Amino acid sequence: MAGIEEFLKERQEQGLLRKLKPASLRLGGKIYFENKEYVDLSSNDYLGLSAHPELKKAAIAATGKFGVASCASRLLSGDSELFQELEDTVAKFKGKEAGLVFNSGYQANVGIISSLFTGGDCIFSDRLNHASIIDGILLSQAKIFRFQHNDPGHLELLLKKERAKFKNALIITESIFSMDGDRAPLKELVGLKEKYNCQIMVDEAHATGVFGENGSGLVEEEGLSARIDLIMGTFSKALAGFGAYLATSRSIVDYLVNTCRSFIYSTALPPAVIAGNLASLKLIQDEPYRRKKLLSMAKMLRDKLQEKGFCVKGASQIIPLILGDNLRAVEFAKKVQEQGYWALPVRPPTVPAGQARLRLSLSYDHNQETLNKLIDVLSTIRI
Ligand SMILES: Cc1ncc(COP(=O)(O)O)c(C=O)c1O
Image (cartoon, rainbow, N blue to C red; front, side):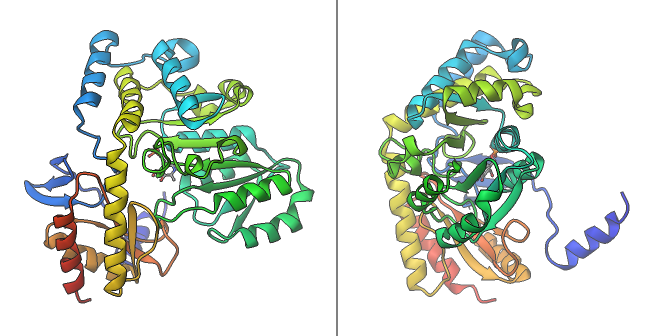
């Protein structure tokens, strides 16, 4: 407990101190703080499903029938036919043999990686992978090798040098990166996994619902489902639900049910959440126009910002505006917020040092006019 005051002071001085900020309402692409309305550029509700009547209906019906809680962990008595249905639906949606639901994406990554890999194994992890992946690797005690972001050449150098020294090996990446909004070179990574006798795990948290003909994700879009061992994703982003899933082989699911501590030692998600997730998976198939509009707005915004000379990254609904310095990012965000747009600065350690940014996260609920005004706002800020 020592050093707390010093830590807080140092973080404050560096512009890195984070604080909670309760919203009074978040709805339809808008967010409200103390009754002031902002265009919400900070949510993961990419498809604008969070207030969809079908999802509300499903959650209310499940609550009416089953009550508000699952009352136990899955292996005790918290399991239900709803979970079974969701897991079968996820497996089909992802083109794999079996599915397993987790209580959150964080718990999924931590639990899956630490159950399947151990000391004596090695894990090759993209340098920008999410904290939950890094924590899962640390917990597994496997040796970690971090390859340069989206760089199969660097990964191959590491594989050549290190792979043979370890028993099992995993290559792990996000498919759409949460803070950079760019796409992993999945085909090349799969080629390397096959060449060097590894397994591969892909985190589709930000791709599910947005990419692929059926909205299943980037793995589907690239036709790679059969060649990827472990496809993980969340219900908490575009699907506007909660919890996460793994799609994989039946034997891996059976193994995790017996060994994965974050799965075993936690109360099962409530029925309303499971029913909402099921309804959301159906909507993804029934309303493909949502993802089409989202991606076309994102392309327009990215192209126009690039034309205006902004340093913009990514190839998805997540558009980071790289600003560099932490305090500059904080000041820039403040000015954007004063103009009625709720976009947040993202700073280290979430992103590498020197790459503080404003993360613009688009939603189906936005429109062309709002985004044109945003471009004007961003263009007039001088810091
Ligand atoms: C790539 C990635 N994986 C996993 C997670 C964790 O998911 P959840 O929010 O469901 O815990 C996130 C969420 O921020 C994420 O961005």
